[in-house]
Image 1 (cartoon, rainbow, N blue to C red):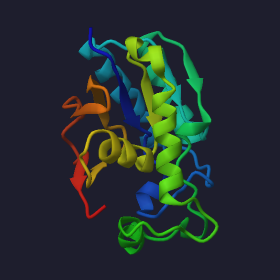
Image 2 (image 1 turned 45 degrees about the horizontal axis):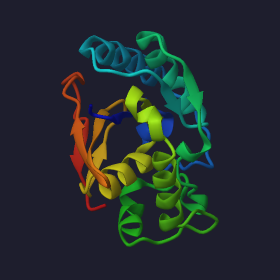
Image 3 (image 1 turned 90 degrees about the vertical axis):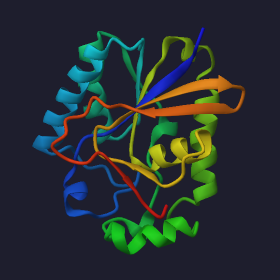
Image 4 (image 1 turned 135 degrees about the vertical axis):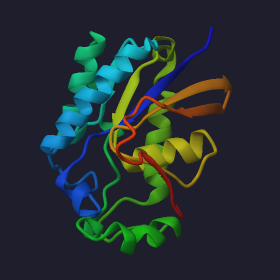
Length: 198
């Protein structure tokens, strides 16, 4: 029997709209469009009939607000886990993504922020602790940095940047080997996945 988990990036925030960095030390709400997109994405995901017995959200309001409609549409419980908090970005918060992209690719640590290796280790340890819950195909709700670690470190797909409310299915093919499939259920009105230098 296969096992794995789903991941969805949170809905749009005002910082996303402005194209600026927003770390785990910056707790911003979803925009009206972010709420609407999360509800629509949840309904589309529920209609696929994919297995999912639990929703696990990061502790920030943008991830909890995205998790709620998924849990409601799937009729499953939702819990929060601290390890799903976005990377702490310190002085990089509020800076343009274009300006900081190279710094992230180089592995720099933001002043007052979290080192990339510490962040990745936290996320991967959280996935490892899922254990038998993987039989229930939980849906993890997090931010762009969490998605980057999962796509790169788990599935060997660096440079994939998920748009808001994009969904990915991670299937464990063998110990230490994961396959990531990006959902095709998103509405075509805007690109949901792009390639970056990260």
